[in-house]
Image (cartoon, rainbow over all chains, first blue to last red; front, side, top):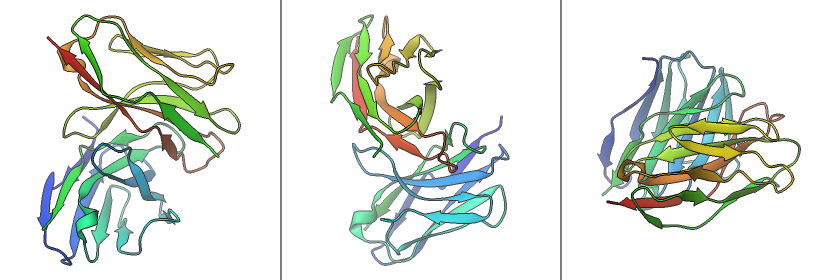
Amino acid sequence: DAMVIQNPRYQVTQFGKPVTLSCSQTLNHNVMYWYQQKSSQAPKLLFHYYDKDFNNEADTPDNFQSRRPNTSFCFLDIRSPGLGDAAMYLCATSRQQREQFFGPGTRLTVL
Amino acid sequence: GNSVTQMEGPVTLSEEAFLTINCTYTATGYPSLFWYVQYPGEGLQLLLKATKADDKGSNKGFEATYRKETTSFHLEKGSVQVSDSAVYFCALRIPTDSWGKLQFGAGTQVVVTP
């Protein structure tokens, strides 16, 4: 089945230690999104790629970066995680402006 | 600006009860409207959608009708099951937004008891 895959499902890191979260898709969608979702809140868009074009949301901290080496993969890099970055990170994809398909998420814990 | 307002939860129901989750929106132009469901510890799944006024989206016994006159997209299910316990998000997308960005409501937790 075509899908959006996120690895790992659970990630533990230490305060200030860089961490990378991974997203891959078999849907061949040209748009990929990264969301941050804190407990009992709606997902908050961090940034997205339209093909290779990177689009950062205005309020996304500089601590968060992203890479998209090819159509299938997208990475979220947190350069110096703080306690406030503990959250669920959701990857989503879409074809052009159509509906978004979400991965299962990665739960990040910062110690 | 664009925004989505959902009724606050948690909504607690007994099995086989009728469920309604209210959703209203503010948007420029003619948005597409969505309901996503999130089960505990999981990502979001698209439940249903509607792209123009008077469209009715339906899936798994859930329905929602795009009401332009009341700017609403209320979610309903006639007989809920314990397995429907989840958080439900209403969302809109502006068609002229070339990135397809979604504006989410705050989410409504639904708890169905046996």
